[in-house]
Image 1 (spheres, rainbow, N blue to C red):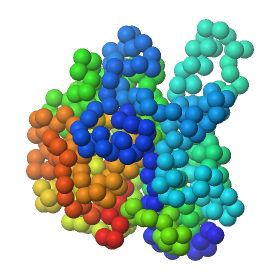
Image 2: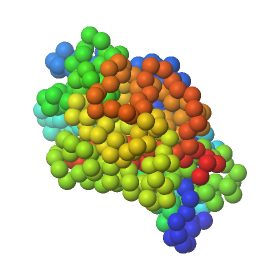
Image 3: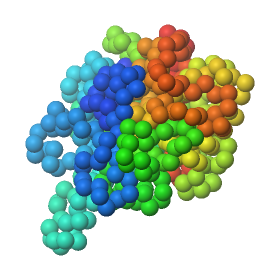
Length: 423
């Protein structure tokens, strides 16, 4: 069932799922993004009184019992729970059975990226070690916390027996997972890939660590307006949890089974800044190279792009560099291309961010609607002639979209999606 030749094959999206601070599924998240709602609240997962940033985006409606029994819930990390829920939704939309069998299972892989892996488990077990001693550590500590366990559980839960791994590239992880999954199909190593990202970092130690870097917003008294991508008054990002999964298929496989196609993955580019552990270069040169590579592989140019889903975390330096990079990439096309971003509403889901943004972007291409960048009251002067979508959702015809995801360490991922039928 797996293709025997490695020619460039077309890769399409047939399913998408997401669990976010705005809802337990992609449909709810999408509608609330269009409405301009915020999922940022005071932290409820722990008492935040000891940390300076006391707000986060929590996926409060996520219910792991939909995919796991009570014992399995206790023996898996929350990051895995979120990914299983998003994958279940994506598979259902794609029209696949609840569990894959036979040749289909062999031809289906899973790439789920993450930044931290089982972060909640790590901190809980370290606390147990310190307070109660090494003999009280759970025997499930390792299988609950290591980063590759989420795609492992996706394979176990849904029967995917093809290539299976966890790309770990900080906030570029979800984008890298989708891009590498598409390349896996192109070279004939799979017919179907479950690809995305997950993160559950709303843990006191992680919040404290990012706060120590002065990376987080401290607008604790106004949570819904704290995350401000591209706004001149931004003061840092808001940590969030969530997951996103796409079902990718070769065009031949999707057509043969009569699947409804949502979009096409036309290109993917990855690069390294080779510059600094946390800061991007001033002109976002690495990100621009990744975007140009994605366009080049698709035989496209910036003149073909209608929409950009920006990484836009709400940090002063990161947003400024991305704005400069978008000008450098788009050039004279900049005033024509709509630029949106989801983190004003969702917060920053780290390793899941690129996957969630990809799922939302595919909806935008399908629906001809683009969610606004929340809390963008006074655009950064660096935005210049860029067409930032602000105020309310925008209607239009969008055929080709770039999705940016950039990580600490200078790792960049850019995906290129086209509206189905517009290639």
